[in-house]
Amino acid sequence: MLGFGKKKKKDAIAADAAIAAETEGEEATAAHPPEPAKKNAGAKGKNQAQESAVVEEAPLEKKKKFITKKLIFILFMVLIAIGASSFLVYTLYFTPKGPDNRVYQEIALPHVKLPQEMLKFSFNHFPDLYAGLVDFNAEVSLFNAEIQRIEAIAQKYPEQKKITDTEKKVLEKGKSTLLKEFSKLEKPIKETYVLFQVDEAQGRARIKEKKQELTDMAQAALETAQAQTKKIKIHAPQAPEGIFQGTLYKLKKKFL
Image (cartoon, rainbow, N blue to C red; front, side, top):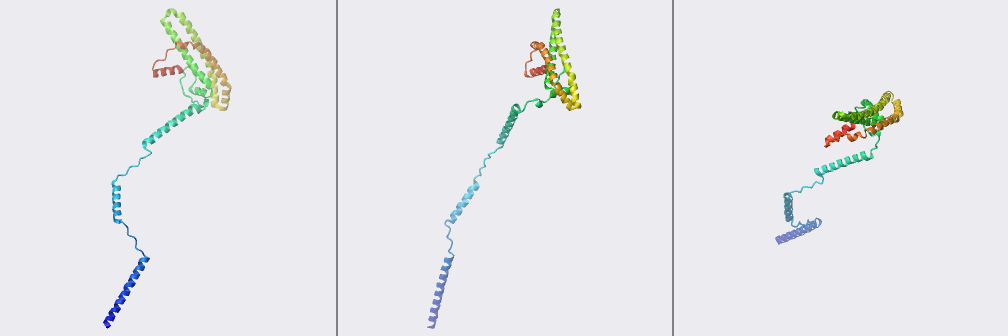
C-alpha cells in the first residue's frame, strides 16, 4: 500500500511538471513568436545565382561618346572660319580709314631725288604730296619710254629724221618742265624734315603752313605733264600674257 501511494504521488508530481513546462513554452512562444519560414528560399537562391552568371557572361555595352575627336576638330575649324571672317568684315567695313591707319612701304622711286627717310616723312605728314611724287615718277618713266620709242623709229627710218626729231624735242621739253617743277619741291621738303627732327613743335607748324602750297604745286605740274603723256599710253607696250608676267609688268609700270 505504501509503495502504491508513493508511485501515485510521483505520477502526480510529474504530471504537474509537464503541465508547467507546457505552460511556460506557450508563454515563451507568445512573447517571441517565431519568424515565418521563407518560402522557396532555395529556389530564389538558385535563380539569383543564375542571374549573376548571365550578367557576368553578357558583354557590357560601350557607352557612346557624344563628343568625339572628329567633332572637336570640326568645331575648331568652324570657330577659326568664323573668327577669320569676322576679322575680315571688321577690317573692311568697320576699321576707320584715314591717314593714321596707313603703313608706309618702301618703294623704288628712281626719279625722285629724296632719301627714303624723307619720302616716309612725306608719306606721314604730306600724304597728298607723297602721292604726287609717286605719280611724278610714273610720268617721267612714260616720257623716257616714249622718247626711246621715237629714237627707235628714227633709226629705222633715218630719211624721216625731221619728223622724229620734232616729236622728240616736244617730249624732252615736257619732261624737262616736269623735272624742273618737282625739283622746286625738294628744298622745302628737306627743310621741313630737318626742322621736325630738331624741334617737333616748330616742324608741325611748318607742315601745317606748307602742306597745301606744296601739294598744289605738285598737282599743277602733274596736270601739265599728263596732258602731254595722255597720248603716250596708247603707244605703250601691251602687258604680257600670264598671271606672273602680267603682274610683274604692272608693278614695273606703276613704280618705275
